[in-house]
Image 1 (cartoon, rainbow, N blue to C red):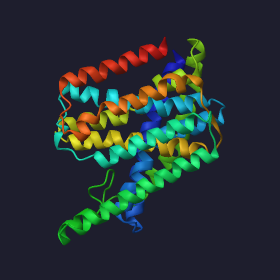
Image 2 (cartoon, one colour):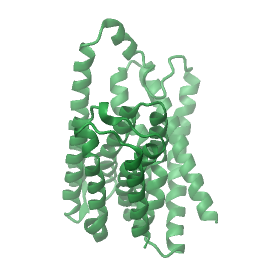
Image 3 (cartoon, rainbow, N blue to C red):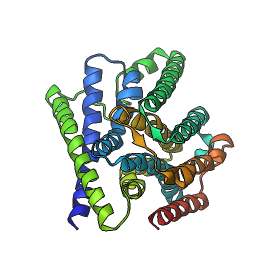
Image 4 (cartoon, rainbow, N blue to C red):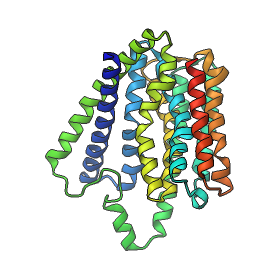
Length: 321
């Protein structure tokens, strides 16, 4: 039982440390004059992906690359099938009014690029730089689009948007000592949590006779998708379907381009043949499933929630078998 307890503890530390790092970094950036828009597109996005990033880097350093790749591919599959499926099953998602087509196309292109690079047999430094270049393009496009949108707002709305109150974790009144505490907790907690989770997840894999890759695709991927699931459930409860759908699409894009892109700077990531034969195609297929909701303005009703959740459970059973 101890590896399971330590794995859960590592995951909890990761999630809490990631949240602390986001709060500290956001408020530090706003205090020193970095525009709120830049903070939203960079620090918050990278901060919320910090647990996945640290897990992947640690896995490569500990010579467990299957865990790193499994974490990303499994998280993306879970984000579509489970993170959208459960809220739709509980409340239904009114996605017909959402405008996520452009971001969704970027995600699909990123998925195809990722799969193409995977067929080279290994994610090398060159592969990582290609993924990071794609990420830079997406961030630049988002920045330009947000600036254009901001120019169309009134001066009052502009001031409100720049004061940081609409950014996750922002608190205009947060004292300096609290900002420093959040940063320290985040910077210490992330590597500690990643070490605990990777080490004990590998022990569990050996105990049950499964590979690190399978653990990455299931246990670790599901754990690192919990923040997205919590966010999406709350968004569905508040009838904010655009937040729910945008959260999933944005998270998947960052997982593909940023996590593996940065991890290749530490070391190469060989691709297990099982990914090429099955898991990558499941990930792509899951992404294609939401085309009707993105392009044809359909709601994700409870029936679709049952279908998406059922498909995820079936996928996990196939992987474990």
